[in-house]
Amino acid sequence: MTTRSSPWLRRLLIALALAFLTVFLFVPLVFVFAEAFKKGYDVFATAIVDPDALSAIRLTLTAAAIAVPLNLLFGVAAAWAIAKFAFPGKSVLTTLIDLPFSVSPVIAGLIFVLVFGLQGWFGPWLKDHDLKVVFAVPGIVLATIFVTFPFVARELIPLMQAQGVEQEEAAAVLGAGGWTTFLRVTLPNIKWGLLYGVILCNARAMGEFGAVAVVSGHIRGQTNTMPLHIEILYNEYQFSAAFAVATLLALLALVTLVLKVLVERKAHGSVA
Amino acid sequence: MSVSTAIATAFDPDGPRVLAARVTRRRASVLPGFGLSLGFTLVYLSLIVLIPLSAAFFKTAQMTWPAFVETVTTPRAIASYKLTFGASLAAAATNALFGLIVAWVLTRYPFPGRRMADALVDLPFALPTAVAGIALTGLFAPNGWFGQGLSQAGIKVAFTPLGVYVALTFIGLPFVVRTVQPVLATLPHELEEAAATLGAGAAQTFRRVVLPIVLPALLTGFALAFARAVGEYGSVIFIAGNMPMISEITPLVIITRLEQYDYQGATAISVVMLVVSFALLLLINLLQAWTRRRLGAQV
Image (cartoon, rainbow over all chains, first blue to last red; front, top):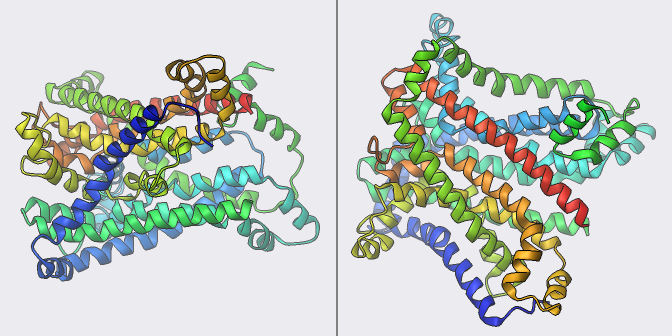
């Protein structure tokens, strides 16, 4: 059923909405692929299998493989505490969890330089023990963890709050232990929200640019992630190569969007 | 209600409903794992977020007040604030207008490709900012698909402040749509129909019926888009041209100072941005509480 607004107004609004989405979303996405293959498939393939590109891909996967499980664990723990129990300061805690979303990525990188950099809090100690965090892989992982910190928790907290505690309490009264209750009662209820949070967390972890740029030091073959590799290629005017690597991240984005639609459909199905 | 409870209620994102539930639930829970989950949450939060963030404030506290003021008010810093906040405001306003139209069209009018359009709205959340940055730069460069036509019309976008605005509009696009959409979905068609039956025109129905209900969510989306835009870096630096005093955003000023090993200066400017961001976060929380109250009252 539709509203009884005039057909012309309706057509105008649809046209405006589609024009806006086309200019800002659809065309840029198409453009990434068009530019990547502009000079032919060979240039594209060469850019992808370039050793520096491969090492950037490896580092990006490594950082995400550490950051996502840690933030998943944190998200579940935080949501369990916040949604299932009553304690003072809960709303402050919820706000603090969202904090990384409101911090500029550049500042997210900067604070880890202040803590672990040569002139930072732990700088002298790290130097004495021949350890490197900033301008090395650990710094990139830390910055990635920071910027993706809230994703899983923010999906799970409202979901678990809405579900209440009755089912878990029933399981506990019937003699189920903590882990059994979580695995058999809570997890099936939250699995789609959990998956959605992980998907978003992963997309951001693999695509993060600003925070990682500050802590990486841009050492080719060592501390370059895929987004940083794209920047270097672009600044060297190797546009086709830059867009070739960019297509991999654009594909990741498309997969993320498709998974999101599927997860939402599943979630609606299981509620209905 | 005591004053402290009133304040707690006002700042609680879930409002009085949960507060009431909390009071009734304050008996000992039979569920296990409270200490473990809360303990892990607090330790992890402190190690990853709170302690590193506090480093910025400790570092700045070592400066004298006049030195701090001088650092954060250099002409180059001031020019960057004007650009960052001005372009973010313009981008968020654009998103408020078009985001409302997109959300309305997606919830009200069936048309071919609607599902795809709906899914595409989240692209700025999923597409890495560096990819968005080089794509927009290529499109709006003087020889690009959009840039060619625009430069013939005498409009330069890439490598000017206008480019910053374009990138920030892209980045903030999903926020307004995704906050307004659920509110429109719960708004019964009957309300608009009733208004129309009573003789209201489309404009009047929108202004008197739809807008008052949507307003809190619209403002929340606007604030979220603005907050995201203020700190944005990746998508902007490719298209901005990054000329000091003209097209240099504040996050880039911070990076430039870092590259000159001026940690103190970089941190001081960061603290200014952090304070603004925290104020925005508080505002967004209040707006979200307002949205929920509006929705609760309506249902």
